[in-house]
Image: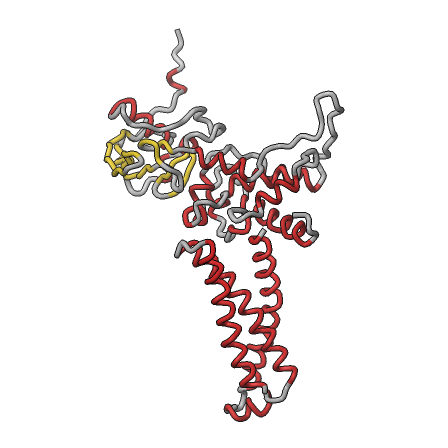
Length: 109
Length: 251
């Protein structure tokens, strides 16, 4: 029943992502009013548990959601299957998690 | 003696149509051009019939009822899947030409006749068969036409097995193991049949690797279904049902 589990994981990650994307876009548009440079952004995000939690959750949800979506494309268009398809899915998910996690740590720690 | 011939539709135009029909078999083939006289109220099946009777008796195709009930005569017409017995030439003519091919996503036997085996095998794979819970000696179970389950089943029940939806489905094209809209639509009607005793097996079958979760909701099936059914909606229902069953640990 892998198909059902992947379906649920993708719907759940989309459910998490929808409000987070809106918060991300809203804050971005609001914050750059009147100009904002990198040091000003970092001064607000560093040490903030709230921003770390929000973008940490964002990255985790993206990693799950994108990996499952790309899995379908790889299966249908690249004809990947079996172990190769599972390795591809985990690879994409872990890559996004590592890259996103690194960015979150750099901006909030 | 009074002739009733005057009541028959008579051609007012008698112009010709250029008809390109795919000829070949599983090893390959190509289009062959035929010129067919145009008639009033002429269907695509009439055109194919004319070619076979008057121009090339070796043309192979499949039909039975000619009135949109049996689901035998579906073909690709100008690139779109259609039931040819109920498709008027006038509604699909591209200028003065029409192309007719065998249904997409199914292996060709010869010319316009496809091998429907995999299409119907998938109905069994989807557990799209009735699992009775009573015998002929039991009382007939009353089913209220107003019940939500009966209404859900009724909305999807009028499938004629023509495989138009199967030919319209891009997921079937990319993933040949996918059960396809017709089998899943039928599974949905049985899922809503309160008399059926095979629900867990059915949910397991449609939740497998080739099952309902492969559907991208592109709605090609719903767009081309000649009976205006909505298999995409049925598949969405199966997705919800399997998700609920998985969360409850039932499948």
